Length: 186
Image (tube, rainbow, N blue to C red; front, side):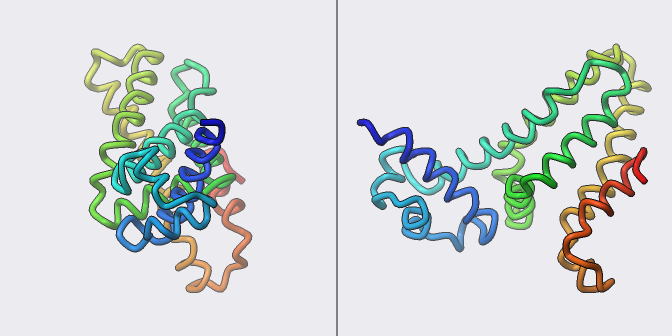
């Protein structure tokens, strides 16, 4: 099958976009196939069904976010830098982050299944790099630092449409505000 990989990729891209906008339940397979320019039977052929396609999209989104963080060095200070890199990746392409938020709003089962292992792997990498694997105090310190730096930025990313309207902000100022809130921001 010559067009199979291309069809599979188009289905994944279309599904990620549509699921991030409308969620799993409100996104019909036919709409995904229309956007992907694929036969509706292609979802069953390539993924086994809509639920498996959704899981593949979530895994892919998690992997894309994890790939952004893999470039961070192994220094003990890399926890904060990892969050910076992740936030920058979300600003460049917010679709994986929106997909995560959409799934969390729908109960989070898919997000936990797809994103938790990736986050856990990155966390364990940070622990090993900082030699904090066996020290509970150092471990708690890294968790505290990650939550302290990630929390405000991700809350701002998630709530941006509400904040634009509430504070009469220009819609294109998200990146500037996120960077101001980061620990070393302006």
